[in-house]
Length: 187
Image 1: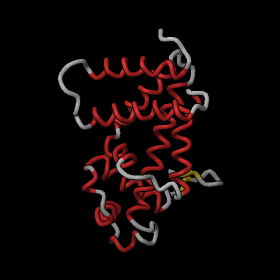
Image 2 (image 1 turned 135 degrees about the horizontal axis):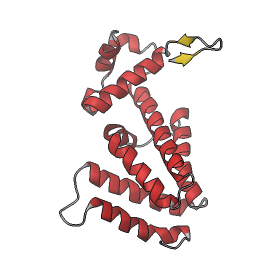
Image 3 (image 1 turned 45 degrees about the vertical axis):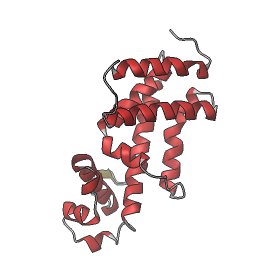
Image 4 (image 1 turned 120 degrees about the horizontal axis):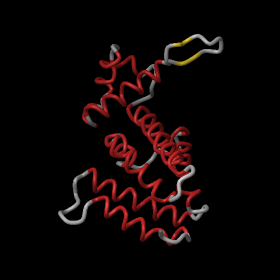
């Protein structure tokens, strides 16, 4: 619930209800379930009524993408705070969040971001902040770490690792290989 200026509980906005329903469908049933018709049915209205609150499916997806990036960024920031090994903490938070929200993670990364959509551009910047802080603002190093974490995550989500060393070991070895980008020695 949303709390009003007088301290009274207000129902969430219709837009927030629509986004929550869409995300629930995506998380529980996968991307095939994310249609305007299904979202409308989920909240008990007709599909054409959705367009009074959200421009189109892309705008609805952008709202989910922005919320997901914000959540993942907050998870990484929280993990990094006070961590003895911030690189590992960020990587673990990245992986944990993505594995807990695979359909949202894929939606975030399955297409180009609508950076012109204010909520998406702002969320992308906030989600990248922990890695930029970790690298002292070195964008090339931040992007290398991002690419590693994303690639490992997608391989894991898609069950693409062949038999051999466990995924945890591969994460550890990869992070050790990246550590020189931070100018900090390995433990």
